Amino acid sequence: MHNARMSHSRQVLSERAACFVQAYAKINLTLEVLKRRADGYHTLSTVMQTVDLYDTLFLFTLDEDEVRITCSRPELGNEENLAVRAARLLRARYAVRQGVEIELHKRIPVAAGLGGGSSDAAAVLRALSQLWQLPVTPGDLGEMAASLGSDVPFFLTGGLALCEGRGEIVTPLAPGWLSSMRWLLLLKPAIEVSTVSIFRRVAARDYTDGAASRAVVAALQAGSEPRAEDLHNGLERTVLELHPEVARARADLLAAGCPVVRLSGSGPTLYAPFATLSRAGMVQESMQAQGYEVYLSRAIYPDMGPVNVMYK
Ligand code: C5P
Image (cartoon, rainbow, N blue to C red; front, side, top):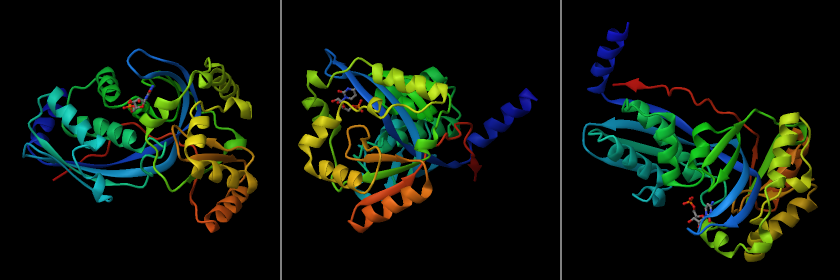
């Protein structure tokens, strides 16, 4: 049995292997900034949740020694793309001689606080280590993910998790979605926000001690509703002050009847949870009529098992 599998894998290595993989977005239920570190990063305590808005990647191994990308948003189809950097990192780390062609269908808004680029990178690490049949351990994957960006490790497991340290220390949590948060509206104001510019402006008065994240984790694990004030984002004050478009969108969501509106990550995307589809749908229509980009979404627990490899 073992030998049969070995010879099979040797045989398929000479063929071209391909797969489709979905890379989901996230929202931050909490994002607490605890302090500034000596290296310029901040110590965080953040509860992240995967949502069912996703990019699709098609990965196709090449005999040539190349990493190529084309993207549905052509301005993102370059060497800087985190998906390309993830592929290059794997190649270098495991001295891979094969290359890969990446097609990236972008749906997650860019520079929006939804983790799209990080999720694409995690999807490439996960899928390509399977296509190239690399002896990668979960620890290796986590380490490579953290070197690509603070929230890339979260996307290796996804679902619901408490993320600490720079964001790279991920503690997965049992699914704990509540009736008040069955549906999520994601509203993306028509601006892009640079994470670096927001973290640079965060001040000591925005620092908290992690109690809100602990309270939200405790509530979710107990199956009870988190208190709205515990859904705290320490970057929100800075983003609302710096970007009036986000403050206006927030006011418009509240005026349309959202019980709770919060910033995701460093924004500008705002999310609003709803207990019923009808209510979420009404607010979505009203916001779209005002010209806003709005997604009706929900929490999701993606399958992180083996990818479905096709051979040619
Ligand atoms: O890790 P990543 O490259 O995604 O972070 C982007 C920027 O966000 C960092 O350069 C830093 O300015 C800021 N950041 C931070 N503290 C974190 C994560 C990110 O200050 N924990």
